[in-house]
Image (cartoon, rainbow, N blue to C red; front, side, top):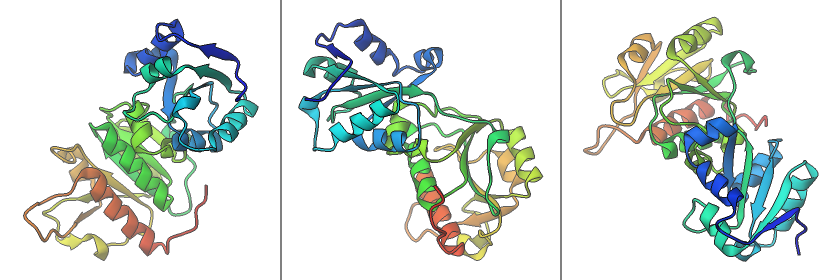
Length: 274
């Protein structure tokens, strides 16, 4: 039996209704909270020092034997533990197959001036990305190569969307994420001597032929139209990813991953700093 601070039996409990409302951005903004669902996602949040507020759990949905240890660690770090019966947990879950863990924590996000950069920064710039799944995948790839940060410019998708948390598998909490406007991002990159790279099918250089070991920001744009003209004009480097089939482009997250891993290869796959 896992110890808890409160037990909820009814799906009509006011707390359950409040948690469901947090799926909407307006309620997340008002409360200053995000939702973290899933063992892997919550594990990474806790390990990254996220100040988890409350963990809601249902033992009937647990998939393994490690949940109790995770809950104990969250409690040691100040989280409140709330046990839910099956019906109320099914109501608060936004997954088809819940694994019995859902938490609330303060929203993430930082300012450009708060970033700490490495000696040769590797950044990802996501301009007007619309789909939470793509933004989450970008974060996952950025984490995999040890990128300094992901800059979300002129954002369309809320970085605290539950589907961003899910698609990132919790790497939203391991990679610094900044929301900023295009102009301030251009100024930041120039100030720090970071070259801007844009991928386009019309570029002459193949992405493996340019220097990605030097400070660089890899910019990707909206799913349908790609980077806007303003970003294409400002690019210091234009590259293409060779395509052998009938498709002339890759999914935005896939293209970013190809470029990020080439940058990591050129840098000798440095060991994880986090």
